[in-house]
Image 1 (cartoon, rainbow, N blue to C red):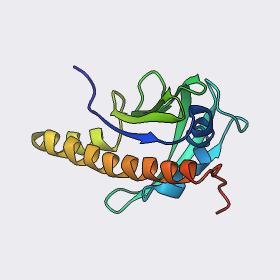
Image 2 (image 1 turned 180 degrees about the vertical axis):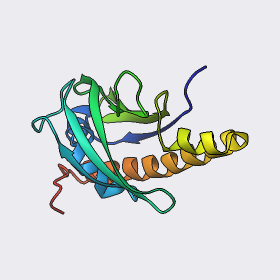
Image 3 (image 1 turned 120 degrees about the horizontal axis):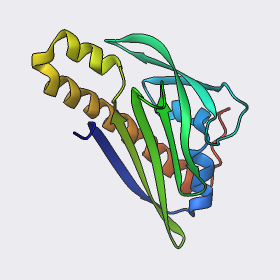
Image 4 (image 1 turned 90 degrees about the horizontal axis):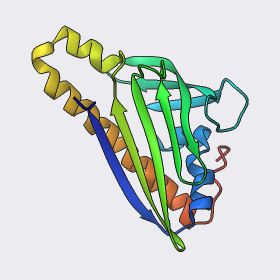
Length: 167
């Protein structure tokens, strides 16, 4: 059975190389998120397969927690993916895909829950009869956050910004 996932996409009036600078700047992502509060590199400061980073999250129902993610796919300027937790059994996997079309780029942002243990799996274990509702609710939260992230990236890219984390 496929793991539960959600994708959002946007067509952005910017070349893929410019968008790559934004989507691969993981320290920029908290700027657009209510849940992801901060990101710090554990291994250096560049996006490459195997590099790790810590992300601190907060959620009104789940509190505050820090995760460790591993870059599992990196093909500039087309694909960036990271696994949260154990890359062999991730709690979640997040992925940006960029498809250039002249001066514009289609960007797809996907999140997949599991197959490893996560807050979702802990909630389901406590209330297995609510599995579908719990998963659907979390995917809906992901979708809202991902849509906001793409909107923020689109705004920066189309304004010619490079996504400095200092603003």
